[in-house]
Image 1: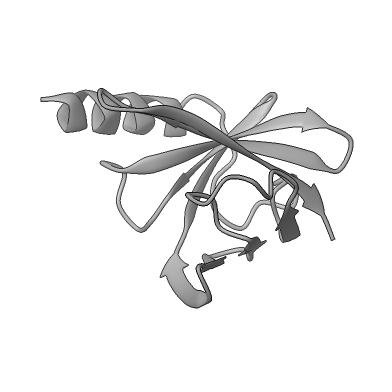
Image 2: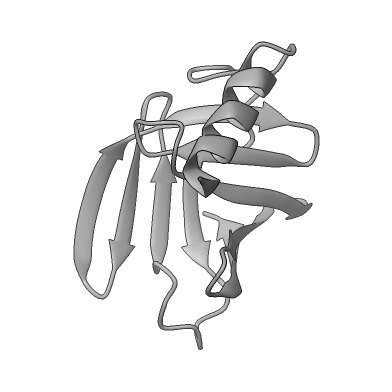
Length: 114
């Protein structure tokens, strides 16, 4: 049920004047390095491209297709489907914070632009 609600939310907001994948105003595009080095659940490096993302976590590199929903102050990133997404908040100049909010955990990871 939660997945359906999230999917509907993203679909509605995609058609409400938001930017989408490939937009030049996407603040995430580029390379990011983990600032919160004490958090083992965070990837150590993130790279966002116009249509894909690369994560390095525990020495393993994963590439996945990315769909971006750019909003003022944050970007939602979906791994190829709108049912699952990550929220990346702009928390300072050249700084973003990945927010994980679910029924089971609330966590965050701070990154600085390379």
